[in-house]
Length: 440
Image (cartoon, rainbow, N blue to C red; front, top):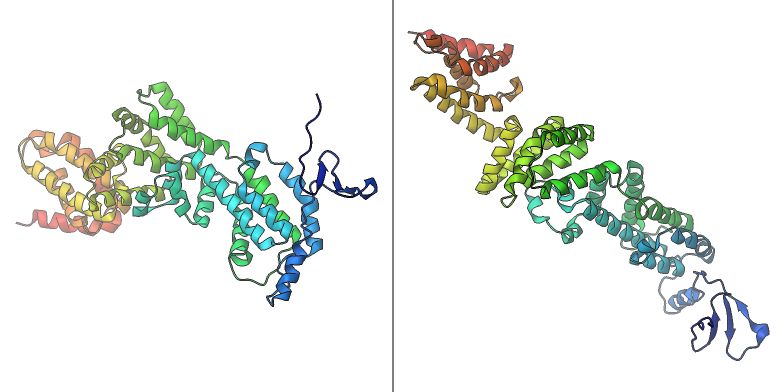
């Protein structure tokens, strides 16, 4: 079979395998050798001449011929290093090439950054859009970020910071990209500047884009987090003890920032009203391990989110959130406003149980709830301290009955635990309370 003919145009026949062009009306001696990867547009200088003719600025508008030659000689090798499946969708990489060929290096800088942003968004989607937004967006604004299209609403700096936090890019790549972003903001075509970008600078930024972003993939730990969250959402069978131990051992090996992401996302799944009840039960099995190995900051942030549910009248979410905090024994990480109100109410309930019928039986559940808000001395709030000390002493001293000296056997441990936390700081409060209790 004959080989296919090369495409023709109005000027002549292009022999692609040899790079030879025969011009119409010419003879064989007029054959011209053309490099098929030649990037430099010989007409670019005519555009500069036209600018000069019509009185517009023309100097430093396009890069010098020598700078463009450097790009033309090195660019093919960079592009060839990319797999075909990445190249076929890299439209801004094409715009980079066009800009570089014409000598518009500031335009090419913007184009290469846009290609970086698109790839980082793809990484975020592959990682899991919910967990990515949980890490990127805090507070009430989180409710407005739900779909892949919402990634466009994130600032480039936030996108970059979150990719680093979740290990979608390395620390070194983050620093390189941060520099490119700063250069884009300072000397890119979208911002006024007189700076002239040279060819080697542009090639360095291109190399970072190709080598450290387009050809790079998230770390194994990041992919494990992604897989864990996806499986957790869809796993509707009970977690058996052996699986629980395996999951808990893996959780303990994760870095704190991954645990922070998992905690925020599991909390979000738990309080979502349409979450399968079995999924919620599975979360309650493993959430205490996630909580105990996580740093304090994300715990306090979740406490703020929980208070927001109550403030904004998301009653079902608030109820489920309270359940979550009970499961992980994290009530001491709820906001001070909530803790002050809740502990005050619980102290009233405990005092009522203590004075009522069968206090030995009814005190412990309320005492357990109070203890969940007071794990250490720093959890004691000034708003509650006097009342807390007074009620704990009254319950520990007991009522004037013979059985167990009026002290609830199961409640006694809670009272002693909290009273031991008082220390020197709150000893005056205890002495004052005792004084009032023995006054006639």
